[in-house]
Structure formats: C-alpha cells, structure tokens
Image 1 (cartoon, one colour):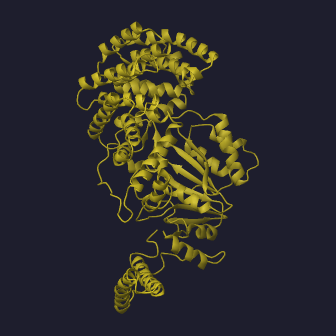
Image 2 (tube, helix red, strand yellow):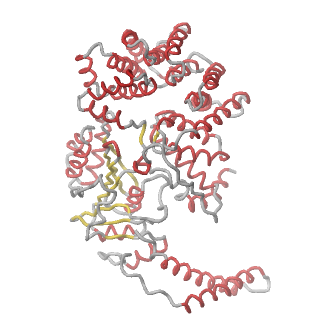
Image 3 (cartoon, helix red, strand yellow):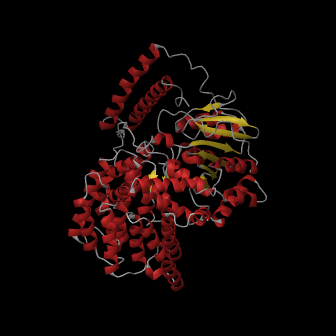
Length: 631
C-alpha cells in the first residue's frame, strides 16, 4: 500500500524535512559545470572579445602535457564559443596555425553539428536535421585532422575524432584506428575512454556486454585514484537509466552494476569533499544510489554532500534541465531520509570535515530581498515565516536579509533561506519580492517571488551563453507585470547579456523602480546589520507567530526581540509547575488506562498536564533567548 506508507511517513517528513541535509549547500549556490578561477577568467575575457587569457591557458596545458586539464578546458571553451564565437574567430584570424585555436575550433565544429541534430533518439530526429548534421560533420573532419597534425602528441584531437566517428556512423575499423591513436598518446586519458564507451554502448554500435567489458577492463588496469575506476559506473547509468533496463531483468548485469557502484564509492572516498575533479562521477553515483531504493538513502545523501555545489550536465540532462533535476533529486533524497527518521529522534549531523574546494560555505551567495511593501506590513507577514529576518525600511519598500538562526529554518528542503522566506512572506499578499543574489565568479542573479512561489529566475554569468530572446522576454514580462513597468523591452535588453553582471543587476533594480542596492552588497555577508533603523524579526514557532500576528494591530510593528528580556521567574514558580506536571501527567496516564475512571476525569487530567507542560516549555524557550531565539 504505497499511499498508506506515504501518508504514515508524512508526520516524519514534516518534522525532520528541514533538518535532514540542512548542511548541504543552498540551491542558489549550486552551479552547473562550474569552471575554476583560471578558466572563469578566460571565459570572462572571451565574452568581452579578448582571446588572450584562453590562449595562455591552453598553451600552458600543451607545454606541461596536462592532457586531462586540457581536454576539460577545450570542451568548456568550445561550448562557450557555440553561442559566443567572436573571440574564437578573432583568434583564428590572428593566428590560423595556433594548435590550441584549431583544437577549440575542431571541438566547436562537433558541437555545432550536434546542436543541429539534438540529443534525441534517431527516430525522433527529422530528415533535414540529419542532412545538416552529416554535412557539418563532413566539414569538421579536416579541422580535426589539422588539430592532430599541429600537435602530434596531443590525445585531445583523438577524443574529438572518436566523437566524430560515433556521429558519422563510421565503421568499427575507423573507430578502432582512432582508439589506437588516442591510447598510444595517453593510455589512461579519461575523456577518450568516455567517448569510446559511448560508441560501444547498445544505443550506438555496441552492446551491454561490450560496454561493460570495456569499462571494467579500463578500471582494472587503472592506477589507484584514477577516475577510470568510475567508468563502469557510467556504463551502469547507461544500462539502467538511458536504456531503462529494470533491476532484475538480468541478474548478471545487475551484479556488474552493483559492483560498479561499490567501486565508485571507494573512488569517491579517495577524493576530498567538494573536489571538482570528482564531481562528474559523484553526480552519477548519487543518481544510482537514489535509484537503488530506500536501503541506500543515506549513501545517496552522503554522495550529494560530497558533491557539494558542483552539479554536472550528465546524468541529469537525461531527465530535463540538468541543474533543476539535480536540485529535484537532491530534495527527493532529503525527503526520503526524513521519512526514514523516527519521529521522536533527531537527524544525525555529519562531523565537520575539510573541503577540497576552497570551502563550499564560501560559495553560498549573498542574498538580499526587496519587498514592494512598507516595513510594518512586511514585519507582520514575517511573523509566520518561521525563520529569522533582518528588515530595513527604504521609502515605500523594505529590504530584507537573513537573520542568524541557531537552527535550520523551515521551508522547502534545499531552498535558500531568503527565497524560502520570500515565498512565505508573499503567501496571501498582493505585493511581490525580488530576491537578489551575488555569488562567486562574478555571477549575479534575481528571483521574482509572488503569491507564495518563485515566478521567474535569471542569472548573469560571465562564463555562460547569452540567454535566448524568448527566455529573456518571458522573464522581463513577468518582472514588468509584478512591479508595474509599462514597457518590458528595456528589461529584456538588460537580461540578454553576460558582461558586467554587477552593473546589469543594479540597472535592472533601477528600471523596476526599486531602491538602489546598499553599499557593500556582494562583498559583505550582511549589509543591513549596521543600519540603525534595521529591525530584527526573530524566528518563531507556528503558535507564537499566530499569537503575535493577532496581537499586532494594523500599521504596528511586532515586538522587538532585542528589547530587554523579562525578569527571570522565581524558583517557587518553577517548583509548583514541575510538581504539577509530576502529579497531572501520571494521573492522566492512569485515567486513560484504568476502566474505572470516567472519560471526563481523564480529559481534565490530560488538559491540566498539557497546560502545565506548555507553561514550562514556553518558559524554557524564553529563558534560552526569547520566543524564537535570536534573529
């Protein structure tokens, strides 16, 4: 009875949902295929038309024979050039025989062909798409050969050639020749193995047996700590997810898939948490553990912890938008873990451990919300948010930033605190909220929250492609409708660009008629704390929030938690309540247990025990720092 099981688990999910996995990075901090600092600088410069940093970056990888690094950098630069090609054209015009420029061009040619074909199955690709696809692959062949000739020791052109062979339906003899060339230059090159694995899978030109055998042979021959130990995991994802083979259909392949997961778990343990080098296989590992069922929920949650902020396009692109699917699956793991936690226990909190990635905590974006309502109205709505907030008036608007909650805030699992609070603020209200984010890598973003839900999200990322006109126009119209802007076209122009995210975010705020951003936003974690007119709204429980809402009149501010605390209760008060609880609680238990005691007396004893217990609980809560703790 799945429905009854889900219904029985609902109280546990409601109690533990916010706490389980609360140590995971917030949704807003998660980035898709995030470049490191040197590559980010090269992408940012390329977006401005300067190919110099990209040229220096790839020249260093060629000089030092860092083929794995070179492969990743070439792939990201080619992906960026797919929608921003000007810088690459300028580079090739200036240095047509530069081996690095020609290599990026070769990878770009393959990407252009696949962009036309799409990633759909062959039966869903139109005839015209196939014709254009094969024509572009034909144009790519001489560019790939030229890249291989200009740098004969480089295995990366042969990784591109393996992908070309798969798309052009090259016979096995051609594939084998390309593989021999790649293996001769770098026998343990991860990218070449991944490309070859795709050729050998069943949906292309191989079989499940051939795919698993190739992956297992490469892993068996790999050095300790090599990512090639994760190659069988990629084969397992291909088998279980892409081909959709259910568990139990073939016990032999089930055993090989399970062995691949165990091998990947061992490999993950050898990398530091948050290490971007491990992000690719850790994303696949988290998915496979989640699909394994309830028995591996804790391992799946741990895999997401180890992954940190580093989402990757695969395997999540198999289900839809990669980043959104990563977040959706991560929430599903948290919900499942909460459902498995006993109601009266506390979720286990992992011990702090060093991160291999400059601190995932530092990646958490700075957030600030602008509410289109005056301070008293926002403060009253904040009473039911169940999270601490800091508010500051700004004319007819109110600025909001997260407070300092000692416990995980309530809200959607995985949602960043301010977006979750904005959803609570606007539930039942007519006014909208604009949540502003400032993240590492120069990224800036906005989220429109209205009537209890996020209605539009946009991010300016210097290393990302320019969004389509349709996407930018849709977001601009939502913003214009929310804030009463007559013409959304200037907003569309601001959204359609990735250069100077700080300026674009500030200009968008001004175009919406909102107050200017406070000085220091993006540089300091809290920009409202030093303002003398800032007002803290403490975290409250549901009952306390309802009580204070009813006690606050129109236009009034709720009680300030920073006001002096009430005088401590005398010892006589505590003694009488403890004694009353010791009397009424056993009396209530005996009354319900004994058939000789009437129902009226049992109810009275229970009400008395609950009343005295509630008084004690409320007094203890106030003694620890006010009705909801400090903001």
